[in-house]
Image 1 (cartoon, helix red, strand yellow):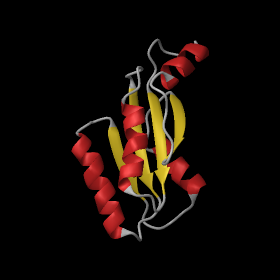
Image 2 (cartoon, rainbow, N blue to C red):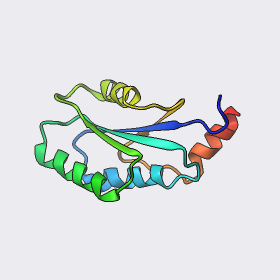
Image 3 (tube, rainbow, N blue to C red):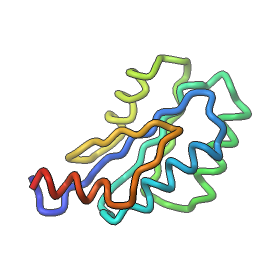
Length: 115
């Protein structure tokens, strides 16, 4: 394990209002551990308006660590998580539900435990 490994956080979402997803996203971006990237996977491509609203809300954050991926068709939660992992580059992967939040020290605590 490298000294400061990259962590890929994956949030999958399905039919969730953007403000709820953004709350989860902000809890990732506000971690005390900074060497992380975030992949948000939308598994509800049929909801074009909702997809665009989420894309716009993520873009407004202006954080280059955030990547947004939208499936071409609904594939289910497991496939969405796999999409997030495939689109990440981290040595570690951490999963977060779209309606949940992390405490600010979560990733730092996990990395210290692995050390």
